[in-house]
Image 1 (tube, protein in one colour):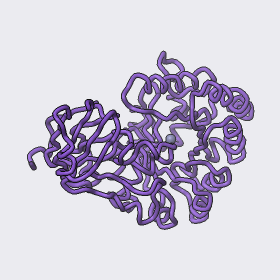
Image 2 (image 1 turned 90 degrees about the vertical axis):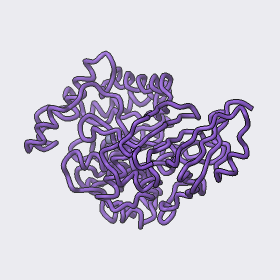
Image 3 (image 1 turned 90 degrees about the horizontal axis):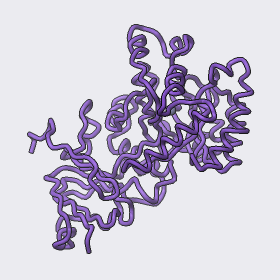
Length: 401
Ligand SMILES: [Zn+2]
């Protein structure tokens, strides 16, 4: 049998094995770690995870063997909320914020999301669009990323991220454009699996969000929502009412909102990177959400304005330092729970037989180091579907071994 790969001599194989559903409450802490473990991969899938001796007994002359040299191995992180397609940066606005301007003041001057919209519309590549053609261009760019890179992207339509300036005085026409043109085309051309709305007093009101997401549901799209990010605007409650798959951000969600999410089994997607980068201290109430039994997810919110980081490790650090989530809870939220929020829980997010062999060998001896060190990246080898896609040979912590 060819095509087999065995990773052996791992200080820890962090499997995240468990029930086939999102993890809640105390389950978030159960990483199912195999000390001195190993893993056998065949045909791009995990075939077996077990002790080193167990896996080595299955190695034949055709098996490629990777010695992890006492490092740790985890499923690849699943980033369930990111805006990876845009043109230009907003480093200039970052400088203004550093000198005291707020995000809202910059937006009022035509900066913020609008400056990325302008840059993206002008670019030959795509990004934040807010017109039919520009939004389709973004989703086509995501489709190309799927085709041309070893990573997997789950596309979400976010034409309702802001009202473009040309519609400011006639916003209901933009809502109609979303409902009557954009959403039907996105669905018909199968360009997205989900539809998302930025529900916020000054962006899309609860009423508008309800209309947009109801239309998306009629066209067969799953629902997600940017909710309660800048104020308590009823976003979490609306998400529960609409039974969305996720409610994202939730920095201002109160106990009533948390209870509503719980009863509708909506997964909260928490994005501490944007709280940090906006210089705010208003982090979402992760502890209360975990205690209420919500299947919490962590993601980067990678975007050029409020969260310019693609680093899941930075997010783990913030979750532990500012949201009182333990490293184990953070890892569960960033892998298996995130996978379920994208309807991929059966395929990724844990290292179990039959799942896609997306995994990372991190240059650490203990999983807690992932959240403990910050400002450095630990990946030593990154694999997607059993194929090596990134190697790093020299690392700051090599000396420990
Ligand atoms: Zn976002």
